Image (cartoon, rainbow, N blue to C red; front, side):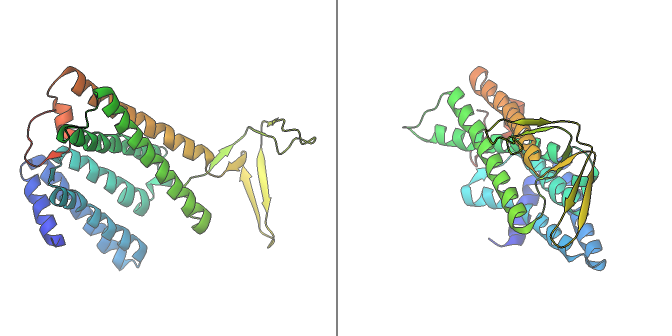
Length: 269
């Protein structure tokens, strides 16, 4: 199926929910305006990011068609919000560095979304197989682990980009206290506690000097652990929703708006 056909399918699915359709149309228009502006200002990297965003907007329709699934419009709207916030607001408009907590918010949302996707996939397998029957607890546990695995793999990707291309995807933190066995003069593995670091001076082999005011520069460790922690929080929130739905009820408006289902299935879990 061609890209324009996927776009048509996506629009048709949104027309079932007028509010979501309007939201999707506005988002796409904003991406197009940003792409045109970036083109005329000569920022071709942002043009490519906008093009990538438009392509990612078509992924739900592609998945629905190829896998014969139905992704609820509300869930698609959340996915599109995440893509727009990460690529257009985060990368193009530099919200990652301009707005404190922007990256944390997105990683929390990522944990929630990945848990929802994992939950839906295992739920479909659980219902469609005669030899595969997980209890609500184990189904939720697998979904939770799926979300955490995606979070870890993404941190591997960020580490690789930082190691080979120096993109600083794992953002730096300035800290004042740390413990290190490297500073142990007797080399006995005793952690030496250093506190109250006022500044750090970096001298490079080519004669460059950089000063870090207020402490020393942690290059990614704190950011990685923070991202995994909020990913866990997001995954836990959806896991509680999913478990409660399967364990205590047969239908839930929250679950119905987030659960991916076979195309012919319309009922609640």
